[in-house]
Amino acid sequence: MTLHAASREALAAAELRLLELADATKAPAELSKLGEELFAVLGVLVGQPQLRRAFADASSDPAGREQLVRGLFDGKVTGATLQVLVVVVTARWSSPRELVDGIESLARTALLVRAERDGKLDDVEDELFRLGRIVAGSHELELLLADHAADTAGKVELIDGLVVGKVDEVTKTLVDQLVRHPRGQRVVDGLSELADLAAKRRQRSVAHVRSAVELTAEQVDRLTTTLTTIYSRPIALHVEVDPRLQGGLQIKIGDEVIDGSVAGRLAALRRNLAS
Image 1 (tube, one colour):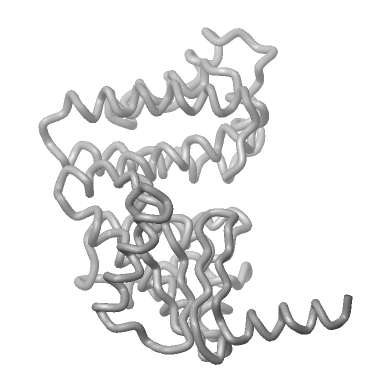
Image 2: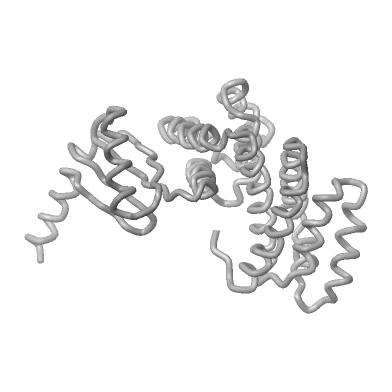
C-alpha cells in the first residue's frame, strides 16, 4: 500500500484512535468485531464510488462528513467502530482510493492486534504464508480466485474449504476478506502482504528465502541467526522451495536481494560476458 503524505497522516491519526480503543477494551472479541465491521464498511465503499468520494472530499466541511458517516452507520456498527470512522472521514486524504486503503489497513490492524492479544500472531503469520504457498502451487485454484466473472460467495466457500477448522479465526477472516475484495490484487500477493503485516506487527523484518531444496530446521535456525546478526534486528524467514534455482539460496529483505543461487550466479556471469 502506497499513500501520499496527507493520507499517511490521516491513517496515523485513525490508527492511534484504534489502538487507544484496543488498549481500553478487556474483551478480545471486541477487536474482532471492530475489524469485521471496518471490513463491512470497506465493502460498502468499494461498491459505492459516490460515497467514498464524499467521505474523501477535502473541500467539504469535516463536520458535514462526520454527520454523513454518523447518519449512515450509527446504530449499525459498534461505538468503537463509529469512533474510528469519524476520525477517518474528518481527516484529509489524498484521494478516495487512499481513504479506502486506510480503512482496509485499519481493519487488518484490529484483527492482528486480536491475534497478538491471544498470543497467536506467530500462528496467523505462518498460516497466511503457508496458504499463500498452497494457492501459488495450484494454477487452477489461482485462476478460479482471480476470475472476475466467478461468484464471490463461491470463491469464499472454496477458500473456506481449505482453511475452516485448520487455521485461527483471525486468519480465516483476513483471507475471506481478501477473496471478497482483492481490489485488483492477486490473492497470492495479498496473502504475502498479510503475512508481512503480521511479521511487522511483531517488529520483525521478513526475509523471503527461495531455496533449491528443502531446508532442515537446523539450517533455518542458523540462517535466521546469521541474518539477525547482519541486520541487527529480528528476522522472520518465509522459505519457499524452488528447484529452478539449481542450488543455493536467494534471499530478499525489503528491496535488497542476496542471490547465492547457482541460477543467479550463472545469470550474473552471462551479463558480465555480454558487457
